[in-house]
Image 1 (cartoon, rainbow, N blue to C red):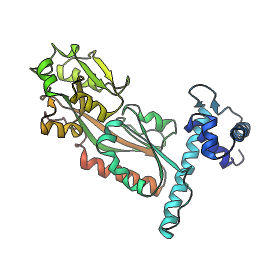
Image 2 (cartoon, rainbow, N blue to C red):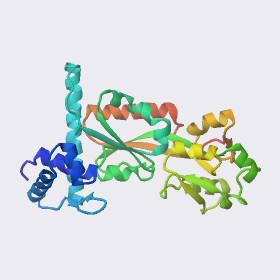
Image 3 (cartoon, one colour):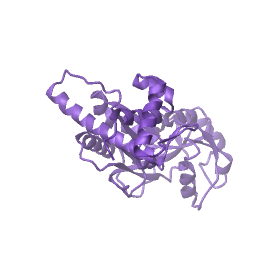
Length: 310
């Protein structure tokens, strides 16, 4: 295949990342007609449709492969930018398109992950953090849409490397007044079915896994209130909306000051987390991996161990 036009590749990426031709044109500072022409030329060159014109718009299998190639090129350019900055610290390039994308579960974002990204943010890199359930973040990496992810998957994906981060410990909490009224003796087999649990979204099974293990049952069905924010869930629990299964790191201040109570103190759920990233020689990717690892190990519990009762 002859050399692919970098402008056309970035056009494809902009269409997919922005979710449409109009927003892609605004990002690239060109007309919508130019965006369409660049995409058609790229599709003609590779001999395949690259974008499904649907709602939501999405890349085809061939488009996803090219999108991964674009992100690898961005990583190489970002590495070069870092090197040049060391030689000329006052020079700042145009990094609008050098977007470094990673997928992280919301609970990690709410607790330990942001300090690991501090260095990247201070380098003025165009960082994109995609939040998803920890059981599904690897799908973003598999499709090539991100260069790294925090996930529960322990097996490295093809073309990627994996590093254990540690275990996130989860506890079941409620507001004191809510607990006194609805679970005065704590969470039990006799009451869990009648109580609402705060959940991130319909993919989130953390509450069901916790309750099933705590009750010694193979599976359970729960009532759910969906709220796609870890901090928001904790505030909703404190306000008396229902029960929450949340990271102990997040609940620790509330448990300490009495604004939350542990309604299942004999059980803690340990969820092992792993960092996956492309297996490429990149100073930026190595620095990101080291930062994620050191920050996680300073905050999380050791992996592969039975969580002690809180």
